[in-house]
Length: 310
Image (cartoon, rainbow, N blue to C red; front, side, top):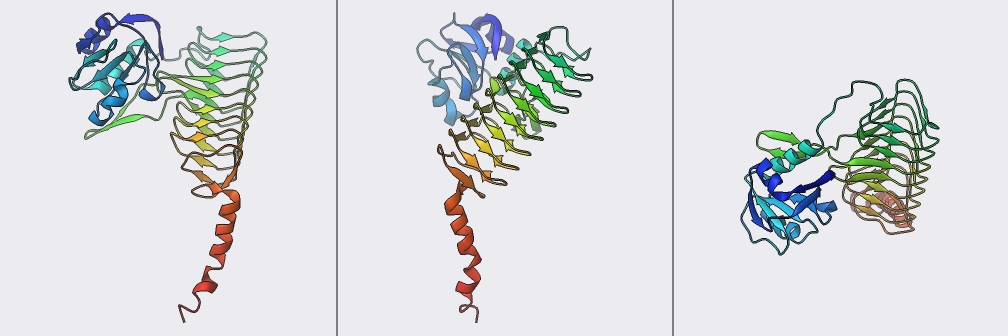
């Protein structure tokens, strides 16, 4: 998530009541979780074993809860609860804006696009040329849609990330400061749901086609010309390459990398990274040829064990 303009780190420190360590004149350009930080970003860490990763990341400003030495050029913000501080910053610069009308006045929609009745379009949404937004679609705040995109009825774009901080008191919701970006020529099927990023972007690449009831988790990047059949689900922060095909009811876990040209057969469950250009099947998904051999062998197991049970 980028701020509308740079914010002095001193201002951030005052807002979250933090002690400033290191460079005192840095300017914050945005805020991001550790997977997506860039130079100028704020990030946070509240578990000691991840301190080193955060301090060595591209982030310029790190919120943490234990005093350490600041790397050269970086600013550390010391406070008791880095998660709450991080959440406060996101809520400050991306405040909740309830809809008062079906199409928010700040939305930018090209006149060539068709918006059917009962579509809901939130604040700061951008819709490009020759798009078709069918009835009863919801497009939430800060979603960017390219040209020649079709979104079928019942789809919900830009839902809040399923992202919580666990504590003894329960689960604290993380305010999603990211966006959804749908590139040119994408088709989104009926009843699909696409989460916005936690603090970066969920991206659907150009020419990708999605069947009904596909779910895309937060911060997922789907490449170009992919086909996602009905009831596919992709967990948060996973990257899918170009020309990938996922058949019906495929489930993909979070934080994975699916390389270019992969084919995943129906009802498979993906729990590990998948290599380019191969076909996978089963749970956990394995190369299809090997998975079928294993199933064939399993069918013969009773014969092999028949003497043992006599």
